[in-house]
Length: 121
Image (cartoon, rainbow, N blue to C red; front, side):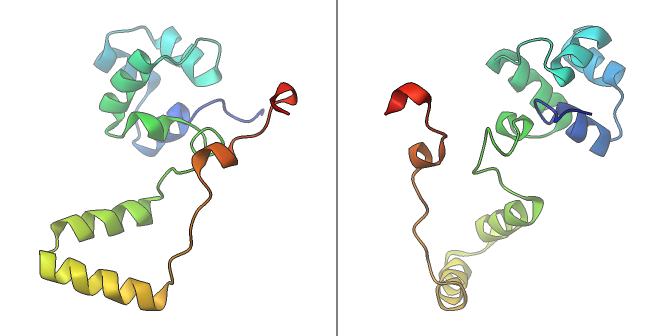
């Protein structure tokens, strides 16, 4: 099977939802969901928003890792949620601990991660 053009199917199956359930949730046909999953229909922002809502995720989560290199893993998301739930004092302690255990490395800006096109020079 060719590489999936997006993560709709992956996320739908992880939530044990049928194409019909997702289609019903966003008021489209099962065929539309199938075509979006296979890349036969354009995945617009409008569809992304509606499908993400039905799947309980963010629209950016529907993109592949190549399309969204800053996509968070479940583990990273859990850490962020824990930080947000912590008191400001605990956040400061966790941040200080992280600085010691995992020194900060500057990540390349997003524009430097995108592949260059032939006419970009």
